[in-house]
Amino acid sequence: MSGDYEQFTYQIKMKTGIDLALYKEAQMKRRLTSLYEKKGYGSFKEYFSAINRDHTLFNEFLDRITINVSEFYRNYKRWEVLEKTILPKVLKRTKRPRVWSAACSSGEEPYTLAMIMAKYLPLSEVKILATDIDENVHSRAKLGIYPERSLQEAPEDIKRKYFIKEGGFYKVADEIKRTVSFKTHNLLADPFGTSYDLIICRNVLIYFTEEAKELLYHKFAKSLNPEGILFVGSTEQIFNAGQYGFEVEDTFFYKKSL
Image (cartoon, helix red, strand yellow):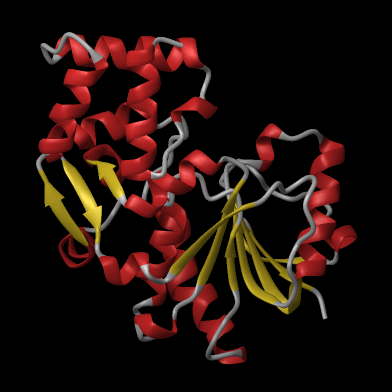
């Protein structure tokens, strides 16, 4: 590792908490060298000095290093079902639901959930656990800065209420950020918490083997309260849900059987 790049990774970690050393060095170095050369800089030292002064440059840097891709309100119609059908039922059972966003990537999903829950509860009472195996995406999520494309399905009133526009990027309002706690968690290896009323795990199960999926379905069921809900992605329908202790509540929503 060159001294210039090594110093840059140290400075970025101090500024953002993102540890570039955890990424494959050759790929990340090539990606960032291409970026700073396009902007007219001759070294990582010059580039850090520039992004430290310029919000737009800094946001472009964050966008470039993001590997995980997600969106706010991804598959909007499913979030609409959550808001109008599922969440009211959850809140009938408990006014302070325990909620977990599993494999949360860079934070769009738990922040979307917080914005929806805010329609029913004061934000001071909204508490969401968000977990992912990748520590780097936690750092990105905590910063809460996203490119415009991440908000393409977000309703306009939500954009106005909970985002601050900075150039071509959007920053999540602090009141939303405070509702989410990010932690590192390996779905396949680590134990699960218990007594959840709602678990969201979308667009990650498709990457697992059938055996791993079955293991996870059982673990999710054990983690939920009776009648608790598991919300999965739009390519992740659970067949034979009953064998895991679930019944179909709606398309891509599964309720733990009593």
